[in-house]
Image (cartoon, rainbow, N blue to C red):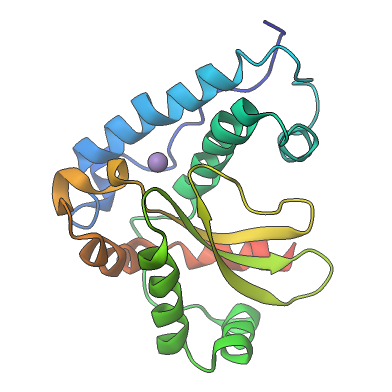
Length: 197
Ligand code: MN3
């Protein structure tokens, strides 16, 4: 195994801080077991140059299934934790609000479209709100498994993990209820920072 600086990032809040929308036990298992396992398995990929910046490395080696799966899982969760906050919820403001209105008409329609992407993903995967790197155009996309968004051309603003491990303890088969609850912890400040990059 090569030396690496990749580590499991600490959450920017406590496991129970997203209650009642996301329960503490789910957060703890998700972080310490699932996220950790993606990292551990990524580090077993011997062909990979771990000295590259993470996003660059993921793009360069995305043809290797283990990098796509475990590297994608590692990256997706790195950003997912930051996309939520105990002080989250509400609505976006400023430039991001305008971009959402330009692309989706209004905030309610944006939420409906995002939910459609989250619900339309059969099996495991993610729903994303992405910004194009070279324009301020935004779009919603869903990806299967742990495939990361197109990081060569886009910047993730928001992402929602719709694997059952993200919600099953509290919501069981009710993915729509999890998606609805998630809006209460969405970190619009993070999304706005990403949008300005
Ligand atoms: Mn997950």
